[in-house]
Length: 502
Image (cartoon, rainbow, N blue to C red; front, side, top):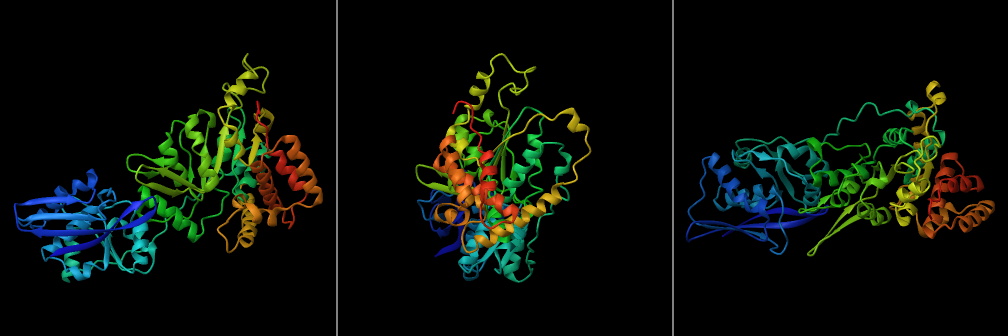
């Protein structure tokens, strides 16, 4: 007789079914796990043996073989502990096999029989719901699994409590789906004095989901502006929140199983490696660009990132997905992000101040800014200068308009875009392309003439041309006008900065 238990393996955020087959046969006592297990799965033998021993159960002196099918799929992670243990208990007659077959099982076992939390419970629960199965998972992950909908969830704190539930001597309480407690206050835009052009660019970027590059000397407020962006963005809608939570669940970052409604804001240090930023590693994990999906990826000191690391962002920024290529498989993670970057104009940072510039100017700026390739530069919609703040500006009282007032205008512009792109996968103007972009952002005659002339003089690429149209469409939405006009085209062109040396 072969006992069977359903579990899953993960490939990106894709859930792949795995059949755990347990056979106890006559022969010399042995406990073997086959089916291409990694080190963590191979070590399940000792954790399962100790957990059963903690409950007073011993494995029979037989030849025990655990097969994880399909055998050619690599099995990674400690979440196979619980399905292996449950399969053994079914083979031993402790748990009913027919009832267990109606569940997907995952969890890590402690040596005392406790069931520890694991990554990926939310996508596993959604996969179980699609297969019309229930889910058996750790108690710590029950709230996370509850977001999958109306499925039966057994969130057990220990292996003994799970056995008692099926024996009818204990009832496991169904978990409740919970939202994470949001931060009460974000840094306010009112804290920034001066920098009206940069504030306007930040508002436009937030309204249309556009990529933004801020260039200015140290202390001009670039990082402060970026840190205030989360307070301007509208909360995630339910579909977006589910997408974000699935990625964070796979990465093991969904604290307490609580779903967040605020858009992610990730700001990795410039020493981050390519796998850390895009994804990968020995066990492929989502990188910062995927953890920022449907939110903001802020890269401070942009030229200080390794050249190869920056170039790896080009494809995800264009396609909205990060692909980790392996010899035996390709792992894909969603990566639809809004890139916000900041940099100094040169290495010393004081290019425009005659009293502070180094003797190598302007060569210093050319060398420093050339670390950013033309194709990456072209993928950034808005380029804005952030000059040093004068003492006179610092002495002024705080501006009357803060984040709350700006967020109202951004929410109104996003509502227009939501209605415009209803029924499509497009959510903001920055994602519009092709025929759809021509339909929604075609300027009037005066605007078209200006754009054509500017594209010739500025040597805009086809990508740059379309990005000007997208920004102009957002400017029109902020102004509440139906058709893009010359004034919107002119402002959008003012944000297309020509980098030195290009």
